[in-house]
Amino acid sequence: MTIAGCDLLARLWDVLRRVMAQAVEDGRIITVDLPDRLSTPESQSQRAYKQENCRNCGALVMTSTVGGRTAYVCPVEQT
Ligand SMILES: [Zn+2]
Image (cartoon, rainbow, N blue to C red; front, side, top):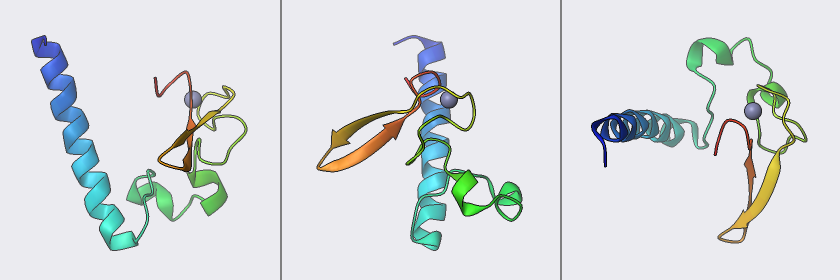
């Protein structure tokens, strides 16, 4: 793996740790940062989850089944 790849994984790990720690407090995973949460309605805080089009870029959201649950993915920003 390249050094750049290691940096990317380290950054990803940092984000995942922060999101999961917050998820334990919230009892669910919310990917909108705290300053944006208060002004963001619940329905708009989910950028791909249960959306037809990605709220960030407008791409058609793709779904697949993972472990018996439906996963929602923006094919432009999350692949
Ligand atoms: Zn998108």
